[in-house]
Image (cartoon, rainbow, N blue to C red; front, side):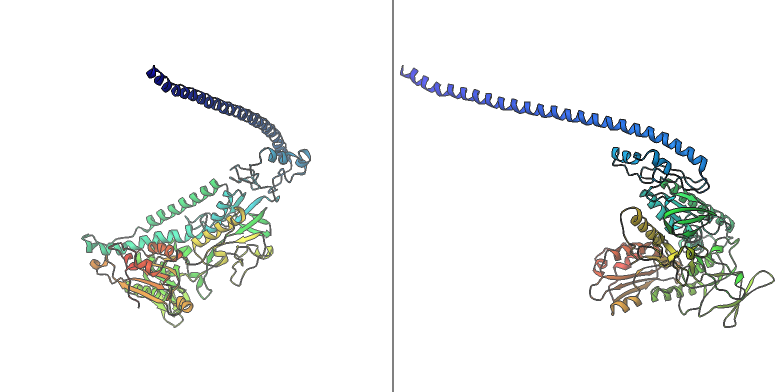
Length: 607
């Protein structure tokens, strides 16, 4: 009995414990059930909300369809009215400006905006096209309707700045047209320009192709040092080369036209000139625009003197029937230096004349001197403080140039590369009230706005820095500011540039002369050496490299090079200067060996 009693006492707590557990589980289950029921209720309410939303969307869709039907009917009425009353270049009626339409449907636009508030009712925001006031126009985007003009943006000039600005503006939703009068640089009768401007047609691109071609004469001479026992002598198939060059220019013209069309820019081949602040005369017919951009570029300048009618410029140099046997190049800038190299490479006997004491004004003094020596070593007759007084045509068609010192030179071609001037003649600037300077350049503020607030200008026509990438940057900034809601300015500091002479020049930042004037006793690092390639060819050609460093901060202020591939190398030097690199950054960089470029990171001794 005692054992049973003990056993019973032991079981009582166990039974009570099980009962507690059961009750606990029941309580938890009740709580969970309540939670599930609550969640189900919430989900049911959410489903009801979704159903309500779907019903609302369905109703809105019905409203949209109803509005679409109304707009379709109204569009047909509008087209009928326009067919009856439109005159040439009359502004296309819009739902914002047509009195008859406003009277019939005063609340249509507000209804559309209330139903679809997220859609921007601006030109081209959905990539749609609209009718153009110009006959045969293609690709015009829908007008914004906020001003009543034919276009949001009308661009005069299809060069680098104009093409970039128009394309970016169209991408921001503007209705844009671009007028370019020249037919293209693939033929001499194309107006020496076209889509792409001077650079594509009679500038950077064909010039670089000719520089490549001219350099092969050096390669043919050098290859024998590397075991190629081929004769470098031979005839130049100039006709074949010119045909290939012209085909490439035509291809690029086509690319630019398609690129503009794909962006929604209406391209018009006609001469355009300003009439007033919002009107442009396009081939004798007038169109209007809220904003107008003038980007017509520049044109070669030649002085007037006896016989000046016999000279050519870079325009004509791209279409010579044969390379001249004797060439005189007058000038000391990019173009003159580059064409002296081109003619020489194709076998011409070249004399280069420059009226100043030293060519390439604005470049570092060491670079200027170095290239002079290189040209003379190659056999180019470089003469400073020399200028032509008159030119006479000989009986055999050749030319006789008499210099100001009385000496004479015979030549087959006399090319003047004495600068370029803004192409603003007969552009209607004065009539429109646009201010120009003494050289004909359009005066603009830092936002590229002229003296007429609705008219803007970029590129060579404003005569700041005549470089294609600068015009591209200016045009892009302007389009972003006017139409993209991203106001910004063009940064003109530390612009890298190259001269495609032989050897090339690459430069960015301050020259030594500029750095000393601004910062005093700057640190100069300079080296000159024979590149590895010419250790076998035994050419006397030398490469020059130079760094200009701030005396206290060690920030690199300028990088200059004259040597093979300098134009390629200097692009990355430009990034370094933009990033504020110091001499220590250069010194701590591991060089790429064996290259000429590694000298930029191994120069340790100041000069």
